[in-house]
Amino acid sequence: MGKYLTTPRWIQKVIPRIIIYVFLISATIMIFIPIVILLFGSVKTTGQMYSHPYSIPNPPNWENILLILSTPSFWNMLKNSLIVMVATTGGTVSICALAAFVFARMQFRGKNFLFNLFTIGLMFPINVAILPVYFVLRQLELMGIPMIDQLWGVILVQIAFQLSGNIMILRGFFTAVPTDLQDVAYMDGCTNFDFFWRIMLPLVKPSLSAVGALVMIASWNDLLVPLIVLNSNQLWTLPLGTMQFQGQYGQDLALVSAFVALSAIPTIIFYFFAERQIVSGLTAGAVKG
Image 1 (cartoon, rainbow, N blue to C red):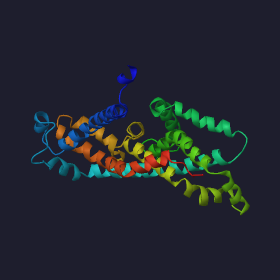
Image 2 (image 1 turned 180 degrees about the vertical axis):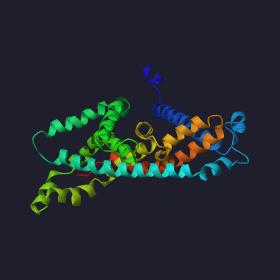
Image 3 (image 1 turned 60 degrees about the horizontal axis):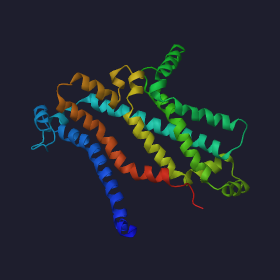
Image 4 (image 1 turned 30 degrees about the vertical axis):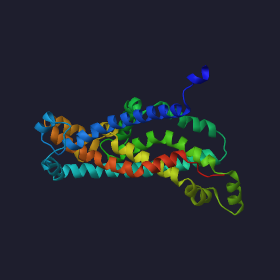
């Protein structure tokens, strides 16, 4: 009798897939609806946004986009964001690669203690530590080292809070490289830096690219650090400028939507190009075999 009540095998396979697809489609819709409303709203009037928030603009109103693109302050904020992003990414990847190589391939007294210190850094996110960081920057300012209202102040703080997690990620890839390869390299006369530069970096290039992409996105979208460090509007980055713009033109939703859309478009485009690199770089091993 029991065998006649057994659920067919094809149903056992299909139902879980249907549930997964329904969940993924629902999550995708929930993520993309705000983005679509934002992009559509950027080419509408404020009245159209209130009356028809989900409709396709017909005809599109490009006045808000053109107004923002013709504003010098927008391009200045874009330049500042690019400077901070490039410098933060370069500094973070360079420091993390060197530190991960040391922790993964070299032996010295106190290595585990130092690595644990970096691990402890994960327990103090920027939201928690921003006040002590500000006090440190103020002390450096009093000592004659200008950090407040300087782009390099933002860059150094962003690099500092990107180190812990990314060192742990890269250390795993450096550790995956076979030790036999290191022994052969040293027998051929390679120094530690030669082995790192000529052999290790090419092998872990996918993971370096993935870490670099994640740091670029995090730096571009960072609001808290520029908000605390920067005072002059000539040094504002796009996230900080977006916040100020929303406060100033909060009643004109179409204009605000245009500004936010223009600020977010570079991140969206970059993520679509870097998504495959991020996934492959963080899931694939450094060396097979």
